[in-house]
Image (cartoon, rainbow, N blue to C red; front, top):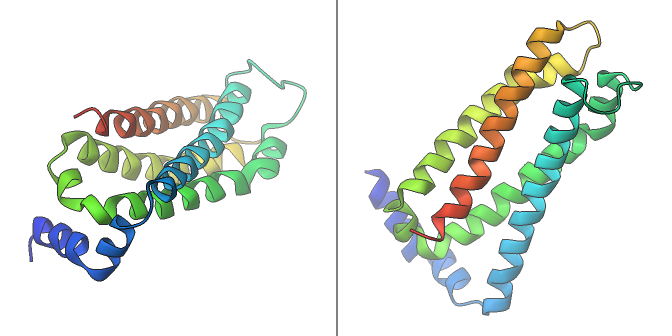
Length: 157
């Protein structure tokens, strides 16, 4: 089965049709949940990155900030994935044809790899190299904001 066929099957499934037939205010709440998830995630990434660059909260160890905010990233990501799927299901074929949707998915995958593979480890220990922490913070910022911008452009094209 091709990817397009999976997208068509999702859209034409009883679940996709059910979500598509919900009131427009429910769809707006999916979008609000999506935005809330992105704000939770980006706020945490920006806060940790500013600390990694020495631009904010210099008196607080980065590991302490990472520990205090660790759940916000995962809550935000959970909100993003659930609401994103709920927005995708009723109009999957429209998303399939949108290049920004695919850009967003690629950037999301890269952002998750950087976050789980490097950034989380670099910020969870005060013993990490400052250069590694700063590079991972810069990569994380670029990738997560790329996800947000690509997602925003989905609606325009």
